[in-house]
Length: 261
Image (cartoon, rainbow, N blue to C red; front, side):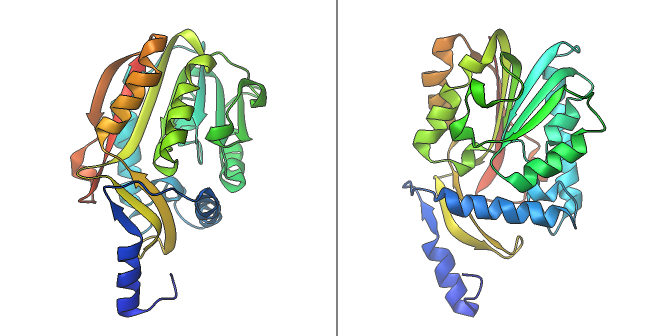
């Protein structure tokens, strides 16, 4: 699609935008997207690799700071807790948790992002207290992690938008088995402000890439949480959007859920 000129590109954009109905995402296309994001991170602001503001890195930094400042105070404190970061990307949450966690386990399906995460975490965690593994969220299992469960905290930020509906349910349903009896879950996702929006290999002039994602209404995630996590003892303690002043998309916004048991 990148080579389609003028009006042809606009017509292609229309074909790659699906409102209301679900369209399956091709994970191989998503893998290629993030592999390219990782390659770019070596020459630009690393946060843009996972927060996507290539043309406005200051906005990426502001969003990271606002999320950290808003959420960090509600997460576990003390050096005894163990964190699992699913879809960790460059491990920005690994850095945010470094002064608190006794152990950090990140997983991501992009080898390039995992390499960046490992390199950046080395100076801030003692040897043996962190690991970042190449692993898709859909393949998550206790015996595939370098640091074994149980964990006291799961962070899952901006991952589910890249999964098909059935895998969203599977990934969330797998969390309780990896967590301690008393634990916290932080889920943050880009959500649709109106009807569900699926982008299928959609060209972005800002990113200079095609990408695929499913922006679902907040109620979709509420239903999944009610079905998968509540029966295992978790309860939603916070459900809200991030700073709307940092939103630059009319059809999507950022929403997070904090759960505890």
